[in-house]
Image (cartoon, rainbow over all chains, first blue to last red; front, side, top):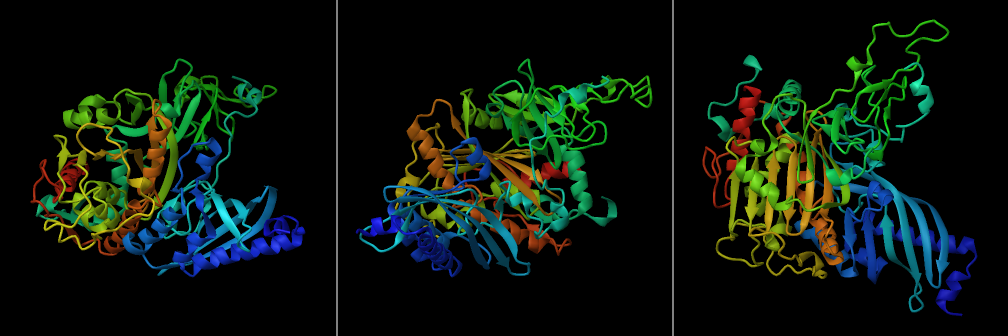
Length: 205
Length: 406
């Protein structure tokens, strides 16, 4: 039996363990700032996109971050190490709710939730970002590992260390920020509420 | 502002730090600048292609709704119910036949006219509005609207010059360079919240001095650098400005020896980012700042509106709308999307700016009596054929001081 077949015939408990191990290794690599190892979680022809939820929902193509090859992931790391200016901080990422939606040949389609926490100097730890991993993981025969092939997240990146947040709908729910009074005016949530019970609105007019 | 705050006697070559943190100054800015005689960017027409399409946005900190009505006209109304002030529209973009406030269901047509008041005549002959209540007097407040080549501006002021005059000939030419009447296609949105005063964002895009020093990425790849042919331009009032540059090579020379940040032989493994095509005449980079809330970004093939939304004295939101043209082929769209990695909340370049703006705020906030030194390239302001200058920032503050009377 090939490695790939072995993976795909694993019972769900074993597969879940494998996936949890993968995500734990992935987040540990980033939390511990071993960024140079990060591209190794991807295959050569990978697609890594971080998409704000509003673009995702409207089918708009703009990504907050787009990498179309493993080489690009390495460039991202070089840029963070050598060119970007940012304040020191610690990040910690939590992944939960890992689900396998299905697979086609040797590609698993996996969803998971993530929360990235950020601790800056002089500030309490806050939620940096939250979103969903929408991963395609390929089971490679030659290597006894699961590699991430394509990654679609629904919100800004945890590795980019951008201080200003891409305020997707989820990040807008942040209540703790360095300027709480200024941000008290921020909308905390949104919902479609424009045209409801029209008949009622006409009553008496 | 009286005795409490006095602008340094040196004039605009000094920027007092109290303007970045004082709540009174912030309140005055809302009134005099954002609600004053200024044209504020609110939307692209491409975001509202059909009747009923609306966009929820802000002018300064004030919520407004931009909507295309049944006749195809664009209306901008306050996002505030005329009854009790509820911000009735909570969706970024959508489509509606009318607007209804959820609280007491007062309903407005797409021009902002009040068309429905529940129980206006009472229930079982009890209650109801007074007999002389006239819905005509209780519509949503409408703003003045100006459109040019697919871009929508609005103003709270009832009297102000036409948009074209407001831009002035040099800024109008730069505006028309990108918005030449071709149909626009929106590629997506980014939103960024930065804990800094809104003026720091404007200063940043009026400051070519920093770009050659802070932005190692831009510098190393010759995307924007002091030794390249470049210029700064302003309108006659100084309120609008543009940084203009031609792309150069990636190499170390005598002229760029001061740029400690230049990394020679820095190579990308995946260079697709750096394959722009010549699209616009003459310049490769034009960053235009239009008073009081818009930055038009044209860096190679990446185009975006950056709309400034104030969130109190010490925070602002930057709403980026990336776009291309409806006639772009797939290759051009891909190019624009790739180059978008330069900008935005996580961009190779913009990351540095957000961080530094936060550092600025945390330095100037606690020292309101301090002042910034703004003498690079002189102490006055005028157009220059280079980027080793803070002229455009001085121009901005020359106009700012007039409007604020400080």
